[in-house]
Length: 74
Image (cartoon, rainbow, N blue to C red; front, side):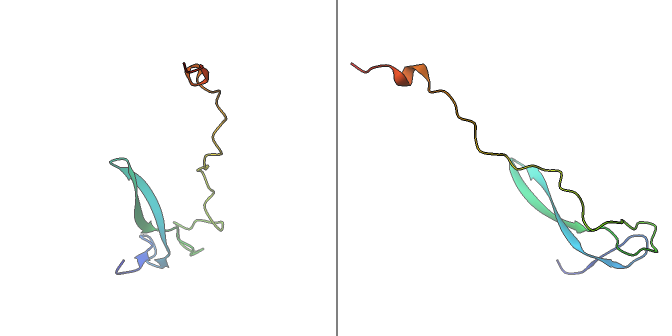
């Protein structure tokens, strides 16, 4: 990351945010320009932060044991 990202509309420096995409089964980080915080800019994005749209998986559900695993061994 050699240089700061800038708003394409007003040219003001913007923060760098990390996005991710899946490549060959692995999540790869990508650094992109964040939203513009200049209230006079057309690309201004009001608010403090983007809402979280992803949910982390919860604990795995308990499964019933397989019938063969409960069979008596001779």
